[in-house]
Length: 313
Length: 313
Image (tube, rainbow over all chains, first blue to last red; front, top):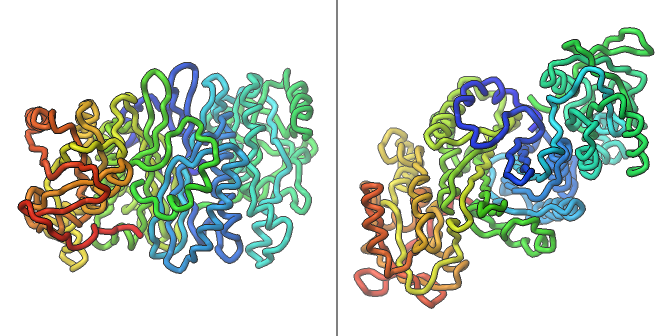
């Protein structure tokens, strides 16, 4: 639910409707407080053949894994624990039963790994390509919810892993190179569920989201929602093996976490994270009182080429 | 979420997953008790062009209304109050902006009529037809939830309105007659939200579901889940103007409520319902200790032609 596009443009038409306890639109998930200091989180995604995946380039099992993983990432990005999903599958007549069984096996693998129930769903026929609709439901303490709107001037901006591998893998797939390790990374995103939960429990973490459209594009969402600017140090962006800076900044679907944290507590946070996960957090810049992201390379202004990978529209 | 098909067949593979508080699969909605005697209800549907609708035969506004209405019907069918929805739209490049704006206007109309929030959603590109994914969220007291599994031998079986008009309208549409009143009924289903809530509050109502696939097909769901049989009196089935008995019994998408109630309280229930809604409840048979639906006409065994309208595979 990271792309609103059309719906966001007409949100004003819907603003007059009762909220019924739901928070407003604009984060990775919709939020419903349910009392007793708890809230539920909701996110939904449609994956359509030919836009989000190519049947020839992705195994059914990998697609089953990925369909779930990207939604779990949205829940984790708000500090939530994913608890259940609803799955709708629309399958053309030419889709073999084997395909559906393999898809479900991949979906089950990821459900099991993250302890998520399949609470419902349905299958329907499609007259065109395969369509996959997933709704994920998360649960968390309200005090742990991280939103895009909570960045504060002076915060350190972090990413929780190396970037660009998925974008490089997509380039391989589009060039017909299906068997590379980068292509496999693109097809098998790893949602940072434990990491998101852990960061959710840290009050020094302010704004958070997952990197689905690419750093250059996604950081703008935090800045817009938080009404602030940022300085980003290109040389500190962690570039994954096989990728380059452009892919790391503008490639999509890395599904790492992008967040801001109180700078006074940032060193301790990163040290504790390393103790817990055996991996570093990468500080890549700071939140400012401006309104735009400003990119620098070794302290000098630099222009970012590209505006973020757009995997929609 | 009334058709499980493939997913139900492999439910055993998912049964080992933690339930995380969710009740098992098998009703119009998934159920999550949230404490304080309350529960949330969840249902999801994918509508795909060429299978669930024909773009030429349905206006964008009507489709916006219907996409939401059929999901609200699922919530109402369990005695719940719909509170919010998530909407995903996948639109081909040839879909004009006007189409999307009209769709959203229809969606907004029904949201407003039933006081339902739009809590989130996204739009993506489609390489083939239009795809609409809706997840509806309902809320209710746990004591008011009606399931398919609660029918008891001796119960009276009711439907909450005349049947067959939608099926007759579909026949019109498939014959190219788009402008008939029956075709308009098919394109504009009216979910019985207030009726479902009211019936949910009545303890003498036992099992309930909405009629989406047709009476002949849907009654089997209640019997299977409740482990009982039924005798159904064909001559008591309320046939809508323009329809016939076959369409009333086997046509789909009427979105009336099908429920069972304690026979000792049935007359009072129907009288109170008429007082409240100015419309009758139609008793069409009774639950038995058998295992199958048995159809009768004027007391004599009769064979039902057809097995219910199948709008899914």
